[in-house]
View 1: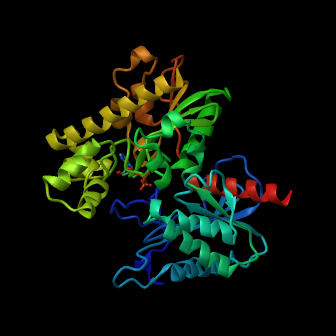
View 2 (view 1 turned 120 degrees about the horizontal axis):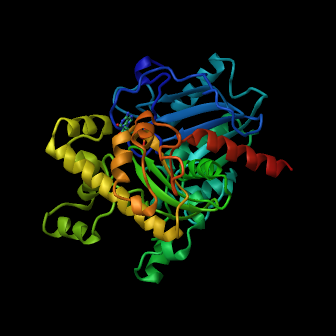
Length: 417
Ligand code: ADP
């Protein structure tokens, strides 16, 4: 394995759906983050096997023992021809550190799986039937589920005796009521083809909404989570249950993202095909890879976009105003869906780090009790609203790997018990 194929790296793609092309080098192993959180002592390997990369993290309770990414799987000139080679390289790296897959201390492997459809609404111990079920969902997630399956198949071969659990990106949203999950189209057709809203980023929304509920000090708290990474989604959570989310049948719907348009009149797709002469593949590529911030101002790295705004760049200014307008609209919509709001939690690379985006997204909402304190926001405090505000505005770093490990352990202890 050459360094070029990716040794330890940080800043990994949290959704696995896209990459932002930034240099992601830097050692990422071993510090454990020092945060004390709940979690059993079992050792869990978390695997996020995406289409061109495999990310892994080995956790012992809340402590990170090892982590990293194998990248450029199957690309021209890459020393990693396929997922089998990538997973074997992960196994070798762990073995080098004395943490091999054959270690008796390894309690389980937790796999991130993007699409669980309506079949998988909870973390699920992996069996042959479950593998077949995930495969049946490939048409709904043609890029992601096959890559997730490749990871599952290789690790099952390497450690057939070890409990392995699939943790689905869609599962947290399974509680969304039909009023929010149903598209207003022909019901028979929609039912037959599975055309409905599923939602994604579920492990992040689960983790951050739980932390936000804890911050509110009320188990019935109503929370809006804004997960703003390269992919971006909002969720409305009441008493720990998700009641609405912005991504839909696919991760294209909702907020403006790094390279995705988010909400768009579906008739624009027809127009692009009929009048613009574009093929379906071209439109797919346009809306998923060349839209969002990239389409609006030629850059999907929010750091440089906000710097350009400061320097008076008009394209960047329009892009940020569209991005923040969409966010504000969803906050208002979810306030109405929930009836009120106790906490608004920002997370993801943009949500955790960009004070200007947080401030602009919530501008003008004082009458709803939503206020951002400039000094706290600039520091990125956990609570960035003033003391005594009706709505707490919070910055809560997400931790999807920890959440996958937590869910994995809870499933295996449940099954063992
Ligand atoms: P992914 O969805 O790929 O996991 P992340 O959650 O890591 O992505 O977020 C990536 C985004 O976060 C990029 O657009 C990046 O520019 C943005 N970001 C990271 N740090 C900052 C920062 N300090 N200010 C503004 N944006 C930032």
